[in-house]
Image 1 (cartoon, rainbow, N blue to C red):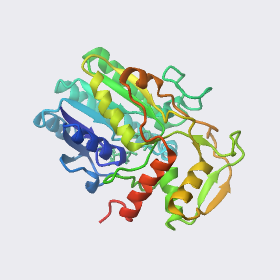
Image 2 (tube, helix red, strand yellow; image 1 turned 90 degrees about the horizontal axis):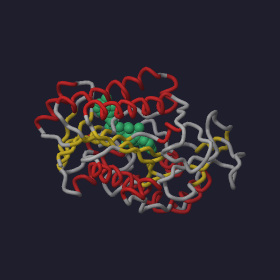
Image 3 (cartoon, helix red, strand yellow; image 1 turned 45 degrees about the horizontal axis):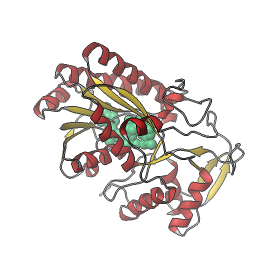
Length: 326
Ligand SMILES: NC(=O)c1ccc[n+]([C@@H]2O[C@H](COP(=O)([O-])OP(=O)(O)OC[C@H]3O[C@@H](n4cnc5c(N)ncnc54)[C@H](O)[C@@H]3O)[C@@H](O)[C@H]2O)c1
């Protein structure tokens, strides 16, 4: 198929594009490069540098490239920023997303895979979280992702656009060519590796008095290649139906201490650590259940071990000491 990947110059979008090219699809990356990197666009994919809100350019791209389906990853995704600037998040994650849906409707494109987030669940009552659990986002990031999911629901009802919405927590790891380069970086694994590499003075642990075996928070990490595979597999249902799937690590998750210890083991270096206070709204454990997508599509993570996730991230960081910068 001819697939448009919005946000394909970003971290997950580049690996999704890689997986699409490998599976024989034609890929058009649509990215403003406002956060992404030209060098992250994979060989074999065409780059259109434009913003989602440029409806004319988007519509023209959909038509000229005879796009059959869209994988929508372009978004703003910093929780703290979303609290300080909710308007920005409604703009990028809802209004700009609606431009995608409107242009798809005009071009009669009826397939979209949406990179949502498990932040839609907020602070869940039980673990692992299932798709049927209550939705209660605690910040504008999760709220705006959910708002777009609702738009997908109504665009399906009104225009027959089928969607797959994928809800997950922490993407991690790298492939040989594509890795994580965010500015600012807010994700634990790259931050730990940066502290180990001397690129930041220390890593702050936000509380070590949680009710978990080692006192630090436990989170769900999924290798970015496994996420990419799920995005491509999800395209397969869109001829006939829509669905929402969680993507979870399939196990019991990893604590902050475990991440630090495994990173130290892999790199052979100590990680400078400071223990700070708990952050408001940080639950002790957040794990998503993948049972539904496993049962329906046969997806489960193949690179589940923290060791292989961190090893791939470290390899990419060593081979790209300045990330995607020249
Ligand atoms: N990284 C994670 O751990 C994680 C977890 C759950 C969900 N997600 C979701 O996955 C998606 C990708 O995340 P990521 O970490 O790869 O982010 P990223 O910032 O690396 O990539 C996003 C890309 O979208 C582009 N973009 C943003 N707004 C745009 C616009 N209006 N027009 C055109 N391009 C635009 C940016 O330039 C960037 O290249 C996001 O939707 C995010 O919410 C990410």
